[in-house]
Length: 218
Image (tube, rainbow, N blue to C red; front, top):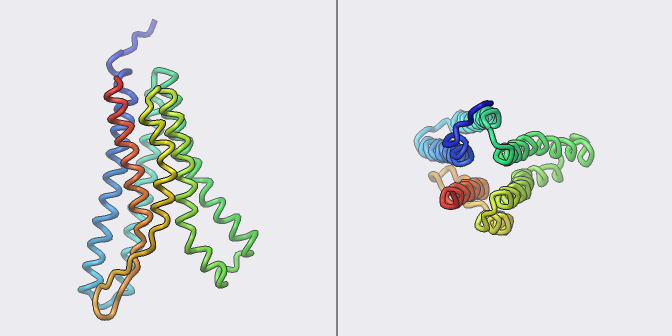
């Protein structure tokens, strides 16, 4: 008979939510700091084309590294699970993450080819491109809300289930916020889309609520 470390098993979910919170917070802060640095560079470097290219490249690299780190983290956490109930929760979070990672681009690509026939230079497609981030956020909000409610139901924690109901409402309010115009200098002003960072902050906040609520319930 295999002896299970009860303390390790007890801390399995708590450790999962804590690490998930920390990983998301680190990459969120990294993106914010990177954007802040490039805003300063925009103001001090004349060749704005190179700065813009480097800005987009660095942010994409951070995003891809974040995807890889989260994928490995989920995979390792699932393998370490002992209790079926705890494993089910982690697998659900992992499944929703992978679903969004794969389904999001597939939906966008399907729309591009079926509605716009891959004609990306049309006015209609330009308008559609501007709402792509909102589509991703909408899909993410629906998936996260379902996973939150599922987690709260299994753990029997009311606060997490309430968070699941509130989550899409807050997301809708965030999506109503318009882009903010930021004047860099006399020659340049840029539009800051604050919807995505605010949504990410909301996601991190929901992880913090789960972590605290579960720690208290234990």
